[in-house]
Amino acid sequence: MMKLDRKRAELELERAGKLNPGKWTDHSRYTAQACENIAARCDGMSPDTAYCYGLLHDIGRYAGVTSEKHLIDGYRFCMEHFVKNAVYDDYDRLVQLCDSLALPSGFCLLEKRFVDVALRYGTPPVMAERWRRILEIRDMFEKKINGSIYDLLPGVEENTFR
Image 1 (cartoon, rainbow, N blue to C red):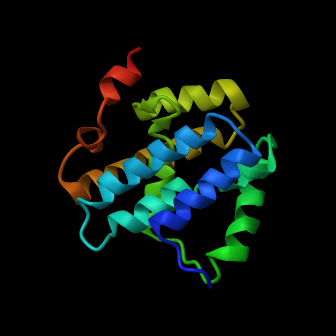
Image 2: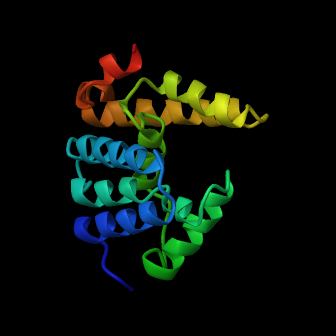
C-alpha cells in the first residue's frame, strides 16, 4: 500500500486537476486547510493526515464532470492506492464537515454551502437528513475543540457575506 503524505496528496490533486480543470481543486484545498486547522485542536488527530484526506476528498472528479458519479470514481481511485482497510472514523466525519465549510473562494458558514450545493444539484429527500447530520458533526467537533469551528477558518465572515 502506498504511503499517503502531504507531498503525495498534493501531487495527486495536481494530476487530477490537469485531467479535469475546475474550481473543485480550490474547494479541495480549502477543505484540506479546514481539516488541518480543526484536527490541530483535537486530541488524537493528526493535522497532516486530516489535511491529506481533505485534499483528496473529491479526487474522483479527475474523471470529468460526472455529477455524483465522482463519489464512485473517487472510491475506486482510493481503493487502488490508499484505502485498503479503511474504517469510518473521526477523520471521515471531519472531512464531511469541512467539505460543507469550503467554497472554491474560501471558507463559509455551513448554511451557505448547503444552499450552494442545493442550487446546483437540487434537494433530494435525503438532503435535510444529510444537513442535520453535518450539524451534529459540527457540534461534536465544537465540543472537542471547546469552541467554534468558525474561529479556525480565516476569512469565513468575509467569504460568507460577499
